[in-house]
Image (tube, rainbow, N blue to C red; front, side, top):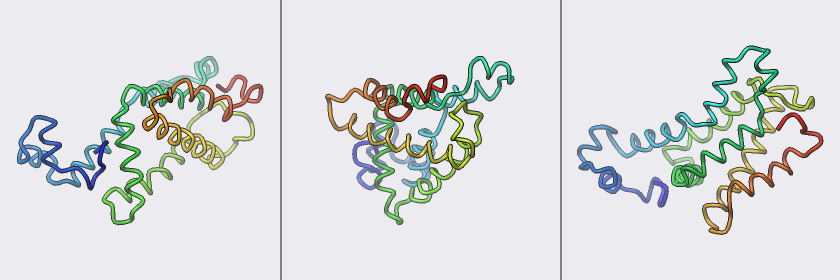
Length: 185
């Protein structure tokens, strides 16, 4: 699905790639939409970025004071995860673009995902500059940063001379400028 999206991928192609018969794969995923659901579930599964958040959610207030949950660091970890899994990143971006079409089987997933993530991110105990004092403001910040990340990912995947991590470091300086973000990055 990373190369040709949902519509351009056949169940047989996926079965061949994973070393199963088409019938064997369908026994597991039921149909092509089930395959799509499995792929999206895998994308949303555990990652270093989620581990970073989970670790901080288990900390005491004193521990959080010493090692705060930092939004810029979280996005940096996401970029590092994406460099390790370029095909997974490509699959996400291709499916996200396809799912703009309301008849796409992942349309609801993607249309609800952003709202859900902004709400979740807004509730986390980030250490942020004082102007980000509501869940809504934190969610909007996350949407802006996430949009920049997705745009850079598209360039990284499509232009061989783009280095995601070094360019993300530059983006951080624009999105989280010093000295305003000192102690928050």
